[in-house]
Image (cartoon, rainbow, N blue to C red; front, side, top):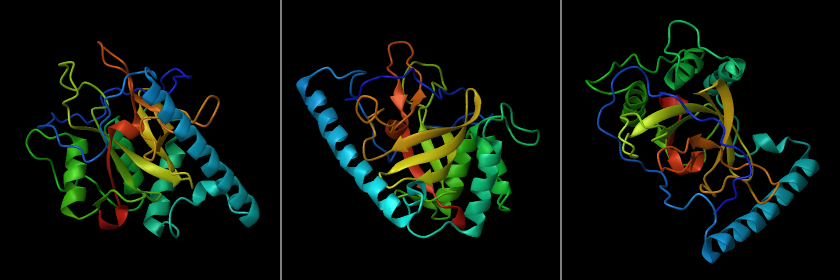
Length: 254
């Protein structure tokens, strides 16, 4: 369905935390089974439709931004982020480019979100761990128990959860449950979410568009909609952020 015009980026190392994983958590997000490259007339047609739709969306977004004088990147959500969410995003942005996290938190994806949320006075793991669960599943359990999990359009400061971003149990299958977590920085009018996370090369930004979860780039030379999040290994193709998405969680209830 998509053309691979760029080498995969933001491929992950072990990001689920240092605590052993529990049983895989079922995903509420989309799961794709398409081939790596467009291989038939149906997939080519889908790509053409996606490109046309995105061109229309982009034109409207640019026109709206030019008319209002407001940067479109901040118009993807209703209202403005809360004070706590603003602090969370501020801290996450400060960490972009950092290669290793400071002492006191794990040097992985869970450590990044914990540092960001600490800025707003929220300790994401003070509820403790259950036997066998990792940091990502522990934070998800906390969010689920407090009613913070949602599938709505996200807001800056939201957590975003992903599944099977790497082969945690090393069996060559996609059966590892929740393995990655990040902080939403911004949402564009076309639905593209920019999030900040701890990847294999340090703290970085990546993109995700759930309207087109299986599309890497909007047409030849167009903007990236979904970055690659899982590397192609042992016969498994590379997977995009939109394909591995599970849910968001709002900081207000955390």
